[in-house]
Image 1 (tube, one colour):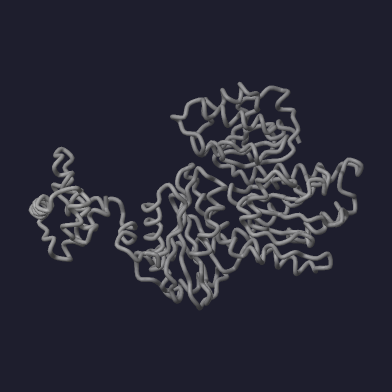
Image 2 (cartoon, one colour):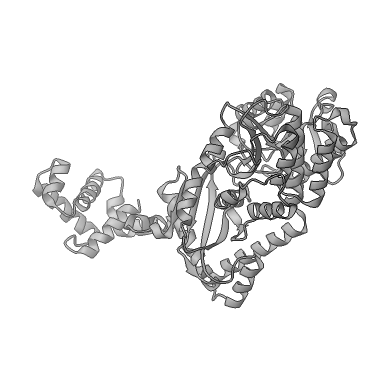
Amino acid sequence: MHVDHLLTIEGLGITLVWGDEHLMSREIAGVTATDLEDPTRFLEPGEIVLSGLVWWRPDDGRARADRFVAALRAGGAVALLAGEETHGAVPGELVDACRAHRVALLSVPARTSFRAVTEAVYLRQWGDLSRRPAPHHALPENVRGQLSRLLELGAGPAELLESAFAHLGTPACHLLTSSGRTVARTSSAPALPAPEAARRLHGASGTTLCVQADATAYDAWHLHLGEADAAPPRVLHEIAEVLAQHRHRHGGGDVARERARAHDALIALIALADTAAPDADALAEAVRSCGLPGEGAYRVVVAAPEGGGRHPDAGRDLLAEALRHLRAAAASAPVSASATHAASTATSVSAANPAYFALAPRPGGEAVAVVHTGADDELPERLREVWPLLHACRPDAVPHAGVSARVKGPAELGRALVQARYALAGARNTAPGAARVTAVDDLSTLEALLAGVPDDVRAAYRSSTLGPLLKESKASYGMLLETLEVFLGNNGSWARTAKALHLHVNTVHYRIQRVEALTGRDLSRLDHKLDLRAALLCR
């Protein structure tokens, strides 16, 4: 398949922005979807690159576009397919950069999903591959035929992986996500903890090949062999194509769409219960429709990546991968050569669509998940373990999450959603530049409690409580604020406050009296001390 064939695929609406005859005749070897500013390490020669351009802003000018396109050229990309959804059109700076670096540029309309483009490419490639004479294949004909049959039967990635490498003596091979989650592994491959798997993906040893599919920075699949010469490169590419076909088939279809509708309905109902009296029967039915147990304890998780572009599904992709890490042990279980197809399929479904959570995107790039928890519930702690791995997948987007307390029964999920959103606000305000998971159980101090209060409410309380002390025009008010903060920090000790500020005790007395006069508070009273301490924490 060549680049110019993309213009002829019915229903995609792809148009040519820039590219000469030579560039348009180049053969496509694969597809990568990325919004990293420098995707070089994820590219293979001959690939087309799909990008929503969330890494570029109108005020960036030409320099950032140049860096991105130069990275594509260095990685051997044959064309860039730029999505129009983020900016409404392909930026002129990007057109100039592609012309300068001689990278073909095509435009993908907002109505066309990247999944549709990727699936069209791989369907065309797999068809072309199947029609070629046997000598053109690296995989033996019998292996290719077996893999085709397994695909048609709906086999899972573990069985496909085992069958694909059997003729090579079943070398140790892992199928990993970008964040280190093991999707499948051959029977000879050891179990890998997620941090170690992520390290190997970016290490210099072994061989890693990206499995092209409509994936995100968080859950893209990668084939990784510990021994670099364990399989010929063309064999790996053919196996990667088979796995990409599997992912496309199981990522869509009626079953997947029905599951997504059930999840959307549950999350929408919970959001409605947040503002009105919950319909217990409707909530219970919605929970059952998602495959969640109707009884037991639940937590609600709300997550969102900050910065790096606000793609509407960014929070969903982030949180889905985080929660799937919690089933990593089941997902990485090897399948022996004698394993039945039914067992393999069950493992695949359990790993890809764990039945213990329901998740849906919400406006603003957020995602909400309902998680059914067991007696050994350690959800916040386990999310914190994988959170740095997810942040490393996309360093330009800082992920935050809020986790509710455990609630009993579907009728209490609306209350849990309120808690989770409050905890999310606390995570954002406490550590705006750092990846953070905050559970409502963590709100054990006044500072932690206030962190979740909306910014405008915090500002209003600070203004009404501290009043004239916030007037920047008078330097003396700044000294009074400093004295108040040190005084409260030293538990109202005049002597320790004087020592910390290098003042005479009488001066401290005078300043505190001025604070009391200006704020109308009596600092001999505990409640008034707490009022002022809370106002200081709201700054």
